[in-house]
Length: 111
Image (cartoon, rainbow, N blue to C red; front, side, top):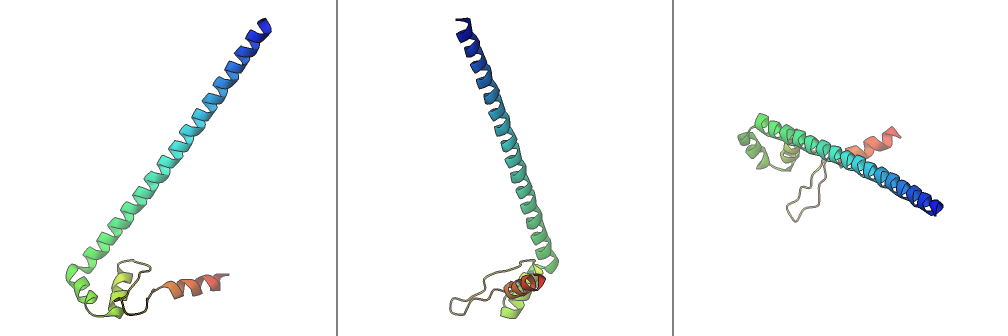
């Protein structure tokens, strides 16, 4: 039964090799995922800091004055804060999505 012992040893070795390969693949995948999460967190921090800097640069009194001055100035305020698109409505008015039309026209002209 040397052949059966040899076959068992070969099977055990193959199982060990496959197990090690899967563990390495899982570790690699986990590292990639961790890097992607870290990147997303850092990008979010950058966006938050940029928004805070915009708000600080504009000033709370200016923001309050613009916010209470009407829809056109509200749109300008949001654009100055770096917000690309937003939903502006008072509950009765139609929805106004600024920059959406510009984005659509810009993408069709590029093709």
